[in-house]
Image 1 (cartoon, rainbow, N blue to C red):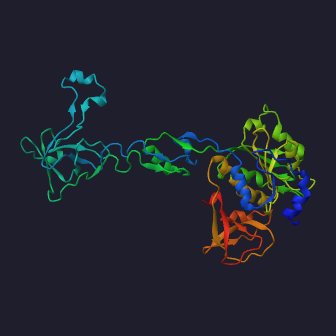
Image 2 (image 1 turned 60 degrees about the horizontal axis):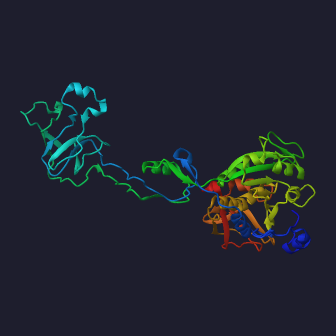
Image 3 (image 1 turned 90 degrees about the vertical axis):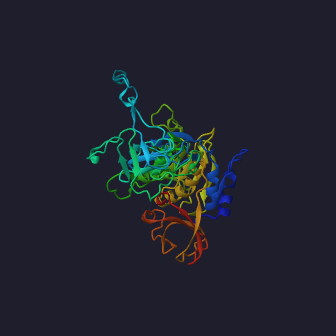
Length: 458
């Protein structure tokens, strides 16, 4: 790979071409280091407002604010077993549900579920039958299992007690009086799991099915979630074959299936994926065509545009020319790292979308998206800058004089570089656990290095 110019050389070459800054704009920076590029990208977009989504649509989204229970769980006291709800100490006088009307003709005029009045309150020394999950009457002390409760008929003794249905006024005795009843024994008490106002889920939570169920149990129908920025992806054409076996001089398209998927993993929605003809005019047209076209950028109302290819300084590199023609403000013009040194970040005029232009080489494009692109999307959603951790290097990596951001994996608690880390190589990224930031002076075994997590390795 040809050597990158030093920041000093590059600034001298382009000093006369740097556009004047507008008050309040980020200044144009060239050959920006990795940390600074992420910080710049994170502060560029205005955070988007959150939105409310129904529970069924909130799965996989990020919670925009901490939510609390709007009702207790359980929201009523219920029986944990089939048996007898009892109040006070035994023996207990049995109470049974009674007809709502004594006149059968009037009773038939009521809806079927209103013809029987349940026992809703017990006095000390009273009991009533309950089933698991059913509401227990007010003042219930405990639920006595059917095997433990012994019914004594109020009338003459019954020969076949197993066929006897308890009647109003019968007596319930505890068959094991030595085992005293505890308050709320076998009762799912009101608010036993969650009280009204308890914290349920914290801001920033990535909502999974268990979270959705918990929110529903505590009375929520909708949840506030971060709004995903809309992204349009413009893919370069250059010698790309979308399926089958490419011929000599052609390459198989790997960015088309990959870049939109990564963008979604990073927390954005991809509204369009389009092929752009080679040359500055192709990019220019894609960024400015009439909103009446079904595939136009303006119809997508994108907050971010991601392009691939054409970001270098050769005669086939055209993205910078198109952005200049559009009077876009270049914020980052190249990264002082490899791969992905050709990354460009620009703002289209008049409040237009932010453009993240990625190199065309597969690993360069992916590492640029995972570092600068991730920070940009986090800023748009109002989330913190993605966390950079420190890990211990398990290998010596020679110095090159430039920062390298490369795929790496963990082994026995140490981080090791993947063997395939060239700008056009993808096998290393496919097996990686993290991106490893190797400083210009290299790394020794046992030395701490920065690592950035991958969204699919949560």
